[in-house]
Image 1 (cartoon, rainbow, N blue to C red):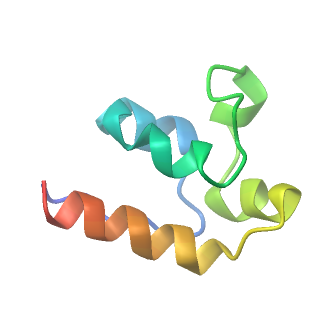
Image 2: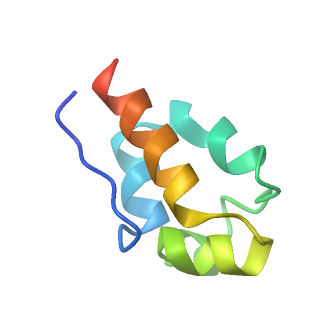
Length: 68
């Protein structure tokens, strides 16, 4: 699948492309994926709140989409 994630990508946009990547958000402690505010956050904003390195999540998501 040709979908590229950056630190500025909106979480809702990622989940709209493929909700099956939700476990990557859950493993970082983001359990409110249906919440409107969570869906409107960027990767960087969500990682800051949850104390996660945004580049680590970006890399995981891009690997996921590359192998889809």
